[in-house]
Image (cartoon, rainbow, N blue to C red):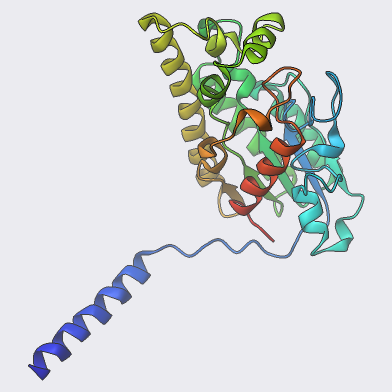
Length: 276
């Protein structure tokens, strides 16, 4: 029996070595950055996180400096004080993927060491399903922005954050009269949120197609980041997969994250990124 046990032990050890050899090593994040910029839309601007229909950049999950959110910036600053005051929010409310090239140019002019990009909600959240940004166009826009960053900031780290699951937005809000009223009154994401209580097959199918468009966007983000190289990190759909609740949304529009939602967005995306 002893030879058999020794053989089994040897096979187990060999299997472990093979598995370890086949597992890619995590990318080295390098030293904590001395400066950073955030690219994106109203979510990155902290819209509706502190006031009625206004940007609240201090509560941005990425570059905000309000301790209630504990942003990427504050987490990095706790490790590297040199980043203090060098947190640039280059996002713009209403932005789509087509706007990322210009925002990337701003980040390049600022000479930052770290860039976050969260974009795609407005590409999918349109007045109608037909108005959504085609997947190929979305990818071309992302590639153009990443190309500008790579050319202008070759040593900078870039984190691409997955587009949140807007189908879940419908799921957690459809039973709320306040949410339904806000969605209708402010014409919020009608590609997904039109007729929110309808169970008609046409509406069910429409919602599924819009969700699939977001999934397709995230697939393109993952591929674009892989093509960029080791200085880029995709969050592996951590934000898309996070089961956010109605209580983490602004009660003014039931679409944008409130301060609690921004905090969760910060912790989820940071842990899935370079996490200095």
